View 1 (cartoon, one colour):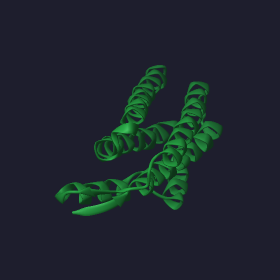
View 2 (view 1 turned 180 degrees about the vertical axis):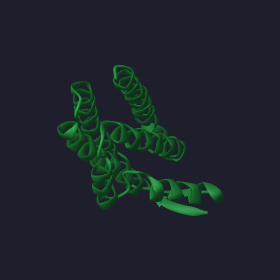
View 3 (view 1 turned 120 degrees about the vertical axis):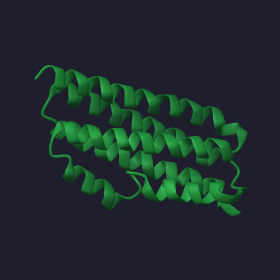
View 4 (view 1 turned 180 degrees about the horizontal axis):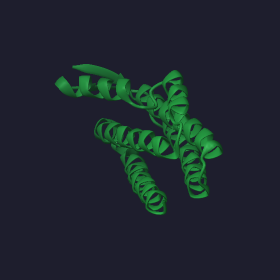
Length: 159
């Protein structure tokens, strides 16, 4: 059994979205292709929206402990630890690794997938009063993956 403070869990999502914004903001300014720049600008903006949603959620919910049974607690810890946007240093290293639009897309897709997995787990353990907000963000994260795939396909097909 693992105990988690609800606000602490939401703080994790805030950090992920903040670092996601930083990544997309930098990538939008360094992208070679105008479509890529536009998509990354849009994703940076969406990350700010998610950040604001999670900050409001943190302020509005009661800070209670939730008990997560068995392997689920360890799984959540692993998702947080291995999330692409898990800390500032990792995010900075990603920016340096993204030496092409294609590499930036690969990193971005992995980050979105990591967030989706984590947010599904959090939705199941956070209070029901915020699950609809997480569902909304999950839908947007899935749309980000589709957008990334579509633009990457478009720029690779036009070569």
